[in-house]
Each structure stands twice: as structure tokens, then as C-alpha cells.
Length: 184
Image 1 (tube, helix red, strand yellow):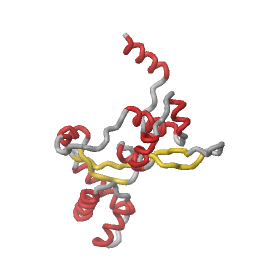
Image 2 (tube, rainbow, N blue to C red):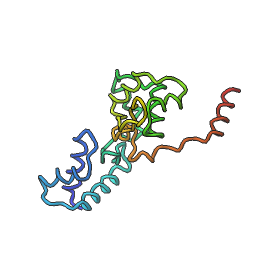
Image 3 (cartoon, rainbow, N blue to C red):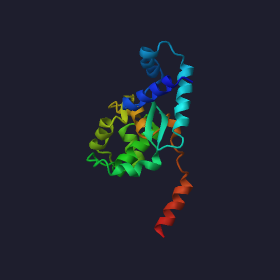
Image 4 (spheres, rainbow, N blue to C red):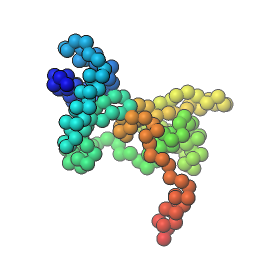
């Protein structure tokens, strides 16, 4: 495999600051290197994956393409570098995004029915601002409530390639047992 292709892809992924699709990588590389086959790009990506095997960095494929990132096991080392002033993720926000992710498309009323409490406008606004959810349509009932679905940005932020990579929900019996153990 041509080292120039491998190193060029590495530079693109490192410098992009966002995931890149195969077609984007191909288009950007062809500006400097001429016509390339997608198979040679995939081989180069595999070489990069092997290169980072014993490193703190990994090549990760997410919904929007490929990106370089720090491996999860080294994330604690980085936490002191950033004094994150952004809003923390509340329990209600996580419950709401979880319901949307697993039951999509859902209305605000569906979420409230599952959670058993009202969903604040701020929670929905926060999810929309983070670009984790989008309005994917409107239910054909009186009032035409918005239907919410997750976005590729949600998948990227949670290191997922597809929505079906979410872990399975625990069975009701498991939850009941867990609840009983916590009550003791």
C-alpha cells in the first residue's frame, strides 16, 4: 500500500475535526494524488486501524463517516485539559433522548406517557440545539404534534454507526429485580 495515500488519509482525518465519508476522502485525495479506487482507500483505512492498534488513538467509523479519536480508556487523562462550561446532561434529558432513540419517531406526548411526567420545552429545545434530534414529521391527529427522531450527530456523539447498535433494553423482570435490590 502506498504510504502517501495512508499518510494523506491520516492527515485529512486528523485535520478535519469531524467525521469524513469515504466519498469525501476520495474527492479530497484525488485533488493531489489523481484517480483512486475506493478499495485502495479502504485498504489504507485498514492500515491506519492497524497502526493505531497499540496506541491511545483509534480510527472509528460513526454514522457520518470515519474519524480519529482518543480511545475511551484514555479519556480521563484529557478531562483536566478542558474546563467544560457547557450544560451538563440532566437525568431528564438523558431519559428523553433515550426514549426518542429507542421508540422513534415519537411525539412529546408519547415521551410524557412513557416517562410519566411532563417534558419541559427547555429539554426538547436543548436536544434540538445539540442537534441530537430533529422534527421528522407530524402525526396526523388533531393538533398535528411533531414527531422527533435522532440525527447522525447523535450517533456520532455516542460513537454509534447505526441506531441498532444501541444496547438492548433490559427486560421488565430485570428492572423489577434491580428495583427490589435497591429498596433493601
